[in-house]
Length: 176
Image (cartoon, rainbow, N blue to C red; front, side, top):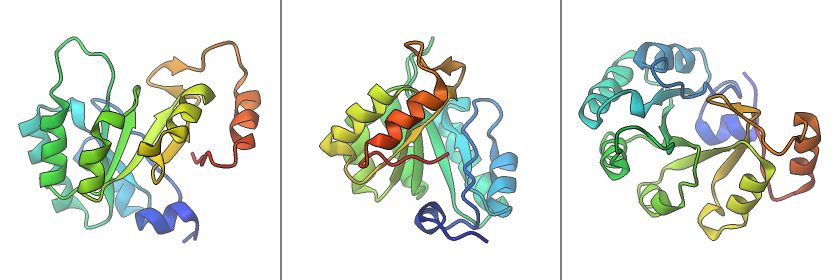
């Protein structure tokens, strides 16, 4: 067992966070990662909001360890009612949400009111810096990711070089 800020914050044994991969991150994978001591992440948009409720309950049957839900805020072919998904997440007592692709700022009030810890994935330093400057993120976490759903870093900045910039901002908390 490791002792880090991440393990303490999420109540996990190892600082390993499974990414929320659409169509792949289902109850069985999420429970396996959580049962092994990491943080499993269920992919919300793999399911309708009603199916998500059932999958969350299935995950709870498979593990009593902490796990979270990924809520990707990507443009989609079908309109997504994010509030409906958030209602399910809150209603099922989930305390960790990973967001990706866009700022979750419009939903932070709902997450905070429910006591949910938010992991916001950013693929470029400029996005992470903007979000960490926002008062909506003062108690939240920002990850710096090389590849997020096939969206690589933009602007021609090499990964290691970008991480150096990110590390320079002391207020920007980074974990993998």
